Length: 411
Image: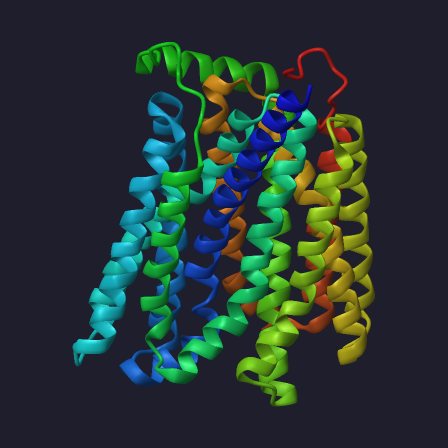
């Protein structure tokens, strides 16, 4: 009995370290993009480029990821998660090193920085989105899968919390240091993956592309209604949170004169709320899919109410309080969406389907800055009325189309 107890404890320790290793990937990929946001004004001055040009440093990364994520998901279903993740992390590291070297050595580094960011986007497409199906593969029990996905979502959000503070701190030393920091983070993740993560071996040969395509079409034919709803909710959640951050960043600097690390700390407040609520939700939802649905709805309604409140006030304290509560709402919704889409799809198609979901989340991230910038020129009430409206759309999608009790919902 003692031996079996010790063996169980050792297995649990290995599983814990494997999960920590896997959770490092979304943390690193989030740092790779969001860490540069507070540095963009400095980049604009140092490189002598326009605001539109410098915004491409973020946009190129996201757009490349959106396009390539579904391909990476397909490859991970065919050849294994680690065989896609590890090369992708190395590609991302090379991209960061190229951008950093260009900024350090070249008098006109912009073009090569963009090329490096393109490679980082390629790496991001094959790393962070594959984490969700990998967690699904690592655990047999749905309770463990939900807990694992909650930790992964928490790690992702913690990266967003840390990014503005770390990016500003590194750039205070030298403006291109964040580029060089990224490859170091990637290599740490690679070592953790190689040494600590052991995924189940595929017992069957992967199906041919035509057969695989048929199986994916069948999945969307049978499960399409709730999958499309989850894709929409994921996109809207990321659109709202990044829209709020973009607005808050501009407001703090232009109207309150708050910049650099101090601004980064304030921006981290709603993200810290998101991080904590993601972790708690992942622990609580277990394998209860109905609970996941109603928890998502509660989070989205909270998000909607917060945006309605802010529409009628520009007071900074009202705004920060509402942003904190908004972070809680999104933090409740996202782990539930992750768990539903991961646990509701068979392993053979899980990588592809969850990657499409991740791609839709990137769409929300890419859309937020330009849309919010346009709405800010219109009016404060209109901006938050739109955010409240899309939150309501997400809530309606959840009520009408996510029905985990129906028979066609994948077990």
